[in-house]
Amino acid sequence: MAKRKIRVLFAAFEAVPFMKTGGLGDVAGSLPQALLETGIELRVMLPKFRTIPEKYRKKMTHVTDFNVSLGWRNLYCGVDKLRHKGVIYYFIDNEYYFDRDRPYGYFDDGERMAFFSKAIVESLQYLPGFTCDVLHCNDWHTALAPVFLREFYQGIPLYENVKAVMTVHNLKFQGRMSDYVLGDILGLSDNPAAAAQLRSGYGTVNFMQGGLCYSDVLTTVSPTYAEEIKDPFYGEHMEGIFRRRSDILHGILNGIDTEHFDPASETDLPANFTASDRSGKAACKAAVQRELGLIEDPDVPLIVMIGRLTSQKGLDLVRHVLGELLTHPIQLAVLGTGDAEYENLVKDYALGSGGKMSAQIRFDEALSHRMYAGADMLLMPSLFEPCGLAQMIAMRYGTLPVVRETGGLKDSVIPYNKYTGEGTGFCFADYNAHTMMFTLLAAADLYRNDPGAWNKLMDNAMAQDFSWARAARDYAAIYEQLHPERKRTV
Ligand code: ADP
View 1 (cartoon, helix red, strand yellow):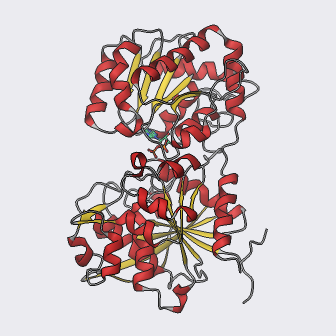
View 2: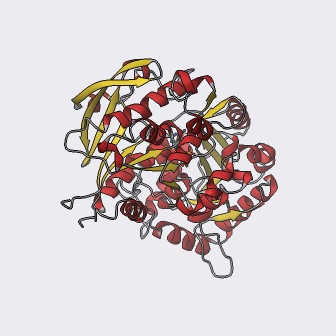
View 3: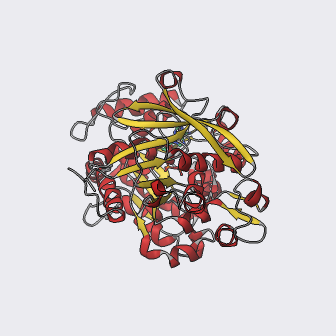
């Protein structure tokens, strides 16, 4: 067999700049480019959502179309193609499933994800010039693809050498559906072995579990989370599978897009700054204080929270001490959307705070950059955190993270050591509201009283390398292990 590059199809439900609701969008938007640089031939597959900006939609070209069977259904599936920043993207086109206002949150999400997963596998025989070696799936939205691959396509020669890699970005979301789905949508009710691997608990079909059982390699997005999920506290009832398959489970810490998040060059920031000349950061802080209706004061530490307002992100700890925290000389600005109880909580406190707190309840990418750039600290007291990107982004802007030591937060933030001055942020271990508050207040004290130590921490934080190159090398090594006959060519 002639030597050629390993070919990987990377399938996800969201990817920047086409669709983003959270960290998965960031990862799927930037890891592929880094993977190409390792000598892998890689293409990305996404749904063709209505909300993809028109400037991209109009550049897409039609590649092929075919029908996909899903239970008793026989469905149209188009594939469009777009080259963006050197990466080839395929978009799965079915208006019934994807021509909607948002990516998730519909009564038929199970059917939509099953369709997408089946379409991915079916498409492998229709992509000109691309014979897939590795199918890399991400989270529950694509977790059925390895199941379909083995149960419906295994005997077809083209599919025999396709290996499946499944990455867990967040185990909390598993795609648990009624048992009815097994026959009506998946077409697997007559297959007891498949049913046994897909069922989790009485009357429930679990898409994520299917992916975990059928994939050749499992990865998750930080080494610590890869260990944690073998434990019932973090395992979300999948811990048994992770323990059983621990020899094929890898934890690879995510990176961030260091061009997209770059205080030195972004044109939309009030001022730019670098690690060696941070004077522009003061202008960013003043501007964001003004923009958010906070008292404009360079001396008061500005703490930001940017992310989903859910219990995962530690909002229960915040709720418990928010009133008390606001009696101290700090400012808090929250940007996020999520559960109504937390949205209302932060809005209520912001209203009565007299310019000490601001709550922005929306998704606003540009504002998030201004907040990362203008803040002194980022609070991220997560109950669990598979990787977390916000803390890495914050460090890139010299904004010191205050985090609970869990998952990727533990792997990416070096705790401040007051004896050596080492560290890139502040950490606490207990899931306890006052422990969080005292850690924050100690950090705020350091900010006010020891600018030398604070500046050293900012130097350390800004010197961290969170680019994707390291993670990409680790993923490429996994692909290579699955296909030792295909060496990379760079
Ligand atoms: P998640 O668990 O949601 O994936 P991550 O920290 O891994 O959390 O990634 C969240 C990403 O989404 C970060 O890039 C963060 O800046 C961004 N983000 C989250 N909420 C908002 C928001 N309301 N506005 C702008 N960006 C947001």
